[in-house]
Image 1 (cartoon, helix red, strand yellow):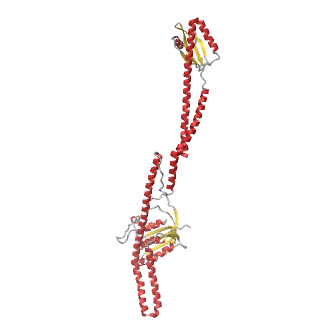
Image 2 (cartoon, one colour):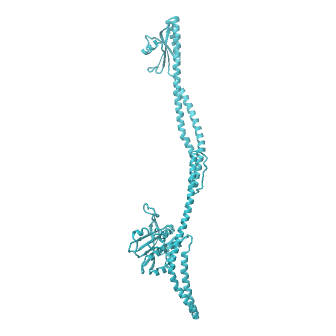
Image 3 (cartoon, one colour):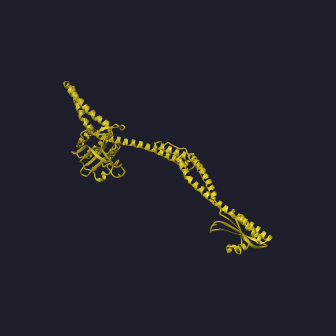
Length: 486
């Protein structure tokens, strides 16, 4: 309706201008017609008086003709017209007018000076016995068109008002039907689309630009709906692929750990086997031997449970987690791998209390495990791997593949750093260290997914992963997670 009102208001001034111009042209035409009628009347009247004077001249002589014209002039003093005899020899007419009258031609002119300015003068020659003996002049004042103009203006104003009201009503009705209703449908459709309903469609009832717009909008929504379905399918596929990659990387790590755990399990199994024989040989100390068997069995069960929990696939479950406890639980799982390599692991928690974050326990453990396993593999025999936890503030880096405009937002959180003292990495290797399938290890020893998977996990938790390294001085990886909102 608002658009229909605007259309009516936009059309109205043009209509008013047209009506005013028509009124102006009508007044000009009336004036011209009035002047033409006045000229014709005055010419005819002057001719009639001249014919009458000529006949009187021929019948009774010049004095009688002049006396008749004088009598007419006297009677006409109070009338609209002024009739007078014009002497061609002594009159005040211009020479050109006298010459035209002498040839028998009537003369017309408007007075432009004196008290009679604007008067129309019509002069007709008087013929008697075939000769022009004088002239009769009929003078008429300019017509008073003010009353006519007032009537025309009044009629025009009335016509304009009626036209404006009619045009407003017609424009509003037509605009509401042809424009308002289709646009209201498009607005409702846009609101449904903005709310996430891509199935919203409008029915084009017109064969004009609005109908074409409706059809194109429906086609666009069809394409958007198809694209959204493809994006959903692609996203689900990507999530499934990422989960498979993470699980594969987790199983790869489990395989490495299991090869070391197999040796670790050998010792308690030997103890269990020996104590079982002693129970058979010396029943008196059966209780002592049985207790040792139970302890060793618990030890093996704990190791196997840790491996199974780590390797088991499960959906993400983000809950409140103590990052310090999470890190301290990972280190025993990797103790055998470290001892087999001859590497000592140390964990330093600089936080006096719990470091609470919202995280999926298994996923963050996997990310930290990947970092520690890489550090162990990069260390030489007799080296150290230092794991440290501290409170930190950091600026969020840009997403991968994007440049950061200015400084990133400051984030309060915790930093888990894993440092080794191995050979380190040159800058070209450091720049690609988080790329999927990039590895410097021989074929078959690494998938090249460990650091990439770790970065994906940390990104999904609202944190980030960074690395620093120098050849000959080892490497340091920093895992940052935001603090739990209080």
